[in-house]
Every structure is written in C-alpha cells, then in structure tokens.
Amino acid sequence: MARFWITVFPLVRAELRTWQERAAAIPDPELREQALATIRSERLSAAGAALFAATLDRHEPGLVRALVAFQVTIDYLDTLSEQPTADPIGNGVQLHRALAEAIGREPGHPDYYARHHAREDGGYLAALVDACREGCSRLPSDGRIQAAAAREAERTAVQGMNHAPAPLREPALRRWAEQQGDAGDASWFELAAAGASSLAVLALIAAAAEPTTTTTSAEQVRAAYFPWIEALSTLLDSLVDRERDALTGEMSFIACYPSDATALMRMEQVAARAVAGARKLPRGERHVVLIAGMIAMHLSEPSAWAPATRPMTLALLRASGTAMAPILLPLMRVWRLLRSRGGETDARGVVPEAEREVCALAAGP
Image (cartoon, rainbow, N blue to C red; front, side, top):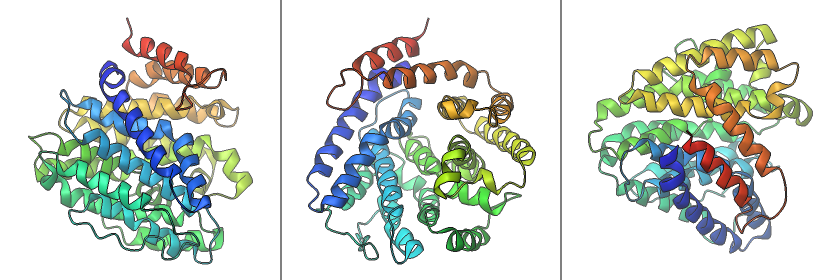
C-alpha cells in the first residue's frame, strides 16, 4: 500500500488528467458527457486497476499507462452499452472489440461505433486502445502473455450483453456461456460474471512487466483469474447493487441464484476458490492481498451491511480465509467517508484531506 500511494497513485492521477482532457475535446456532446462522467465516477476503478503495478518491486515504464488505459476503456464502453439502441447486443459486442484491440499487437481500429447512434469521438476510443497497446509493448514479457491476455480480452465482449433488455439478455448470456470451454462447475451466470470482469487482463498486463514471466506462468495467471477471481469481483458488485438493480432492471447476478441461502453458500465457495487459486500463483501472496482489497472495497459500501445482505457480507469475510480483508475494510470505509464529506476538492474532484488521511492509514504503524 505504501508503494501504491507513493509511487503508483501519482502516475494514475496524471493519466486520468490526460484522459479527462482528451475526453473534454470529444466533438459529439453526448459522447463527451458520457466519457467525462465515466472518468469522474470511476476514478476508484482506475486506481484499483493500477494496484497491480504495486505488486512489482520496481517501476516499469508503460505499466501504469497500460493498466489505466485498459480500465478507462472498459468503464467507458460499459457506459456506452447502457444507452438505448436498436440492437443492444450487437452494439455492445461491436463496441467491446476495442478491448481485444487494446491487447493485440497490430492496430486495427475497426469501426467500434458501427452499431451505435453516436460516433464522433474525435479519436478518443482509438487513443485509449493505442495507449494500452503501446504501454504493453514496452514491457519485457509482453510477447509471452499475448495468447492468454487475448483470450481473456475476447471474453469481455460479454459485458456488452449485460445491459440488453431482459428478454434478450439471458438467452444471449446463456449462449455465450455454452461456448466457454473451461467452465468447470460454474453456472452460466457465474461465467458471464467472470467474463464481464477486467481482472484477468490487468493481472496479465502486470505479469508482462516481470522479465521472468513465461507463457506457462501467464497461463497459470489466466486460469486462476478466470473464472473464480473474476466471478467473485462481479458477484460482489452485484451484491452491493442488489436493491438498485431490482429497481432499474439491470442485470443482477446475485438474483440468478434460486435463494439467498444458495447465494450465500455459493459465494462462500467462489471466494474460497478465488483465494486458493491466487495462493498457487508465483508470488501468490500479492494476488491474495489484491483479492482482499477487492473484497474490502465492495463490502465497505453501506449497502453491504443492510439487514438482508449482512449475513452474506460476514460469510464472505470468513470465506476469504485471509486476515487482510477485515484489516483493509476499515481503511476502505474511511476512504468512502472522507470522499463523501463534501467541502473543497481539487481539480480531480478529490478531497485532498481524504488523500492525506488515507495515505497515513495505508502507511500504517
């Protein structure tokens, strides 16, 4: 955490400022507002992606840039996929081709907006794709993670299906899940939850920064993250958003379980498998810390402690099998509390006092 706040976070801040400036120059007013709103609301998501850079003992040029660019891209595409369109599934899949391009070696830049009603973004999405690809190309083991990263980036197209109307959404997600060959005993919606996460690609980008990474170890990382670590990430998100999703009609992965009791039991299993898979990886303790941080970040949401959700929250903390999640939970609560205080913010919309206090807590005794 000290490495993140001292070394990585200032780079994240600079990258986000760059993309905010680029978004402000988008010609189409609708796309411009959506891009700016996404950056404002998803800063914590970008910072979370950059946590992978803190798992290295040294700085690698291009790593933070690639991680932030990929996460900003996936968050922007998620926002675009939420907009009404005549062909929601086709539009979502076409837009999400940008994620596979961001990991690929050769620029293709197909018409990502071919099925979208707005398209004049001034090259914003292509610039994000190029920034991720350029950042990855500077990493010493980029070539050795290519196959595994491309496989996982292709899966993220499922995220474009999640915002389709319910009658179209479930059949499309079921068909997608049937095409996945490494499902184990995961259900169709657990697979869809895993595919909608960016964690496997982020972990592989970070692995590319390690000179010792091999194609075998890259595949180990990929297999550990898909499906269980990634499924846990999206299921946690769905857990804390359960009431909101019920009101809006958005996809709720938690609601796909037949009962709360089944959901509780299965979430415990998913969390245990996620942590067990992480521990088997090279330098696995660092992956476990990231999972603990992910759990703490989601469970620090007030909605995670609502009466209907509290039993599952407590079960997940126990099932993680690591003391790190309970330790990090108060830190995440402080972060959220200080950010919600209002008061004076800097140009990034961040309360400077919050950053100072969280940095002090992160450094710890």
